[in-house]
Length: 236
Image 1 (cartoon, rainbow, N blue to C red):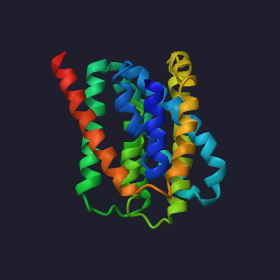
Image 2 (image 1 turned 90 degrees about the vertical axis):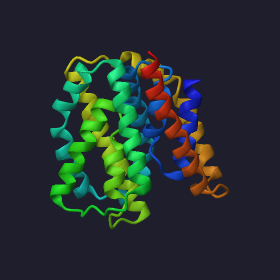
Image 3 (image 1 turned 45 degrees about the horizontal axis):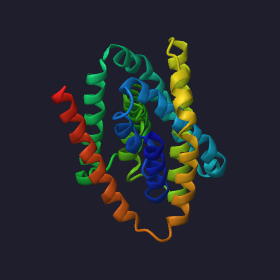
Image 4 (image 1 turned 180 degrees about the vertical axis):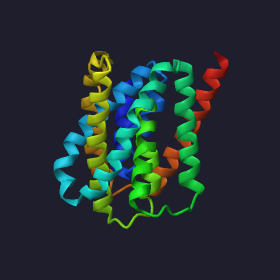
């Protein structure tokens, strides 16, 4: 069943451009402990970025990524502190809250964030805090880049490069602080075939399926997962 979740998330990412992690993380928390899910998401996302990066690197805005990464690195210590001291239930609530707020912001907010060095660093810090604690570095970046002066190719390349570098930093930081990735790697191995299959099928369906329809389906699914997460916490 977790492999099917990864397949579905990869399929929808290939069609809509939404992040793999923001779709898969809340669903995988139904099957795994939240703290293990965070580590699994880093491993799976890194595999995805390694495959994609050679194809999109030329379009990436490397200077923008370099500045954002500064903020991302500054967020590692406080993010790890939250990861260590939050219980699994508190982490579930945090993940559900991050996704819920992000969904509302992406759907109803039309505020344009001015792209500048200060905002680059702030976005990196928020992404780092969200990434280390929940495995989802994407929401702050998506909202910041939503109205950036990027072509679709530059947006994709810049995002993939950022997630590759930030993922490498976070995994290294976790390992340096004694976090064992062995269980996450073991679980991720079984998900890689589903990941590849989902991306390949999504690329083939891209011309035949409305991205707008899939985005609506994703929003409905994630709202349901958020509500289910809050319900499961209250029920326990």
